[in-house]
Length: 193
Ligand code: B4P
Image (cartoon, rainbow, N blue to C red; front, top):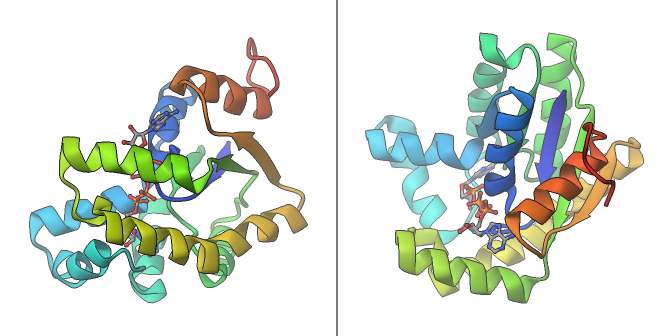
């Protein structure tokens, strides 16, 4: 199955994608993880992306398209994938459709994990203490939420208009939210949310 996970920063996309990956046996492709890996490895891409990410801004659409096109072309993505963090604006959503058309496999399901902004600020403050991620600093989080509302929220309607969107309430235990997602995906043994 080819799934796109949508939701504000800190809504639990990365957390849920890791669980879905194990349940469904398809790769979890996180553009945030790919970028953080490039920063850690000190590649040219990592050097370009580091300051942009720390501010909470989006890395350029052109760079992101190159990354995603190459990742989706890898062998393990041919039987499905869970995309986490891409697309993040309408340009990326249309670019993704273009890449998937070339590969002849369109997105099948888009799932939005819905958490209020207050809950997100709390979660990311906790993660800032635990992991010290530069973009979890309070000012950067506020900026990321603004970027999300302006640029990423329209992507929700993009998939809604294609009849591919499901929304899942993202507050509760991690297990409860996984069960809601698996229900939406109609994976056997799980209740619908
Ligand atoms: P991401 O890595 O995608 O960061 P994110 O949106 O914060 O999601 P993340 O996966 O970390 O959070 P999650 O919801 O899992 O992006 C980072 C940066 O990379 C961007 O700001 C941008 O600069 C750049 N970037 C990435 N993709 C890009 C693109 N396509 N275009 C341009 N730039 C791009 O988890 C958050 C926290 O909540 C965790 O600590 C988790 O433990 C906790 N949590 C999860 N579920 C919970 C629950 N049910 N209850 C309580 N806490 C929970």
